[in-house]
Image (cartoon, rainbow, N blue to C red; front, side, top):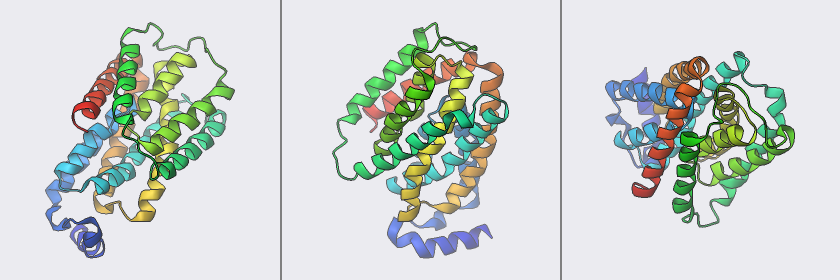
Length: 271
């Protein structure tokens, strides 16, 4: 059945994507499913799962645009699983985030439209510097704890504003979105590491969904691969969220630091 699906997809999209899906045998799909598990775990705890999945997709022979689109389709499943797990455990209130969810979606949608009309090359230098700043904050700040601290800004007023801005960035560029959300929730709104991760996952789902809509309409997603990796993301996203809830800052802090540094290196030296 899997091979039949590949053949049908290949016949329809091979010309537009420029690849031959006959190379995607069962073992390659199994390997990509395993990559989805690992990436889902990392993403649920600290974000940055794309650092694992996008290179794996490119290694598998998927062209860059197809890799980005397929990555969005499979990663949103793991992020949704992580967000649902955090919500079910009581770490985030969906109702309190509704204005921010709307803002993040609108910002990402606007960013996806704008990116087709502007030059974003300056971000290739600015974003790694910002991501390094996130890593330094999580390394040296004493405010990253397993209990909530004092908020510097009013949650109901400023979270939607940050969601709009960071969502816009996600639509324009993308890498580091989770790190920026984490930094805002910890540094400005006083959330514990686990609650910051929970809120980040909710808004990540929203901003990713807006960008994914464009990819789906354009037919850029390679669905057989996306579905296999999404299965791995469900497992990894659940395990990662449970780990973040159980161990809190002890796991979240070092993972955010490592992911931020790796992201900065990737953007600076392997664009």
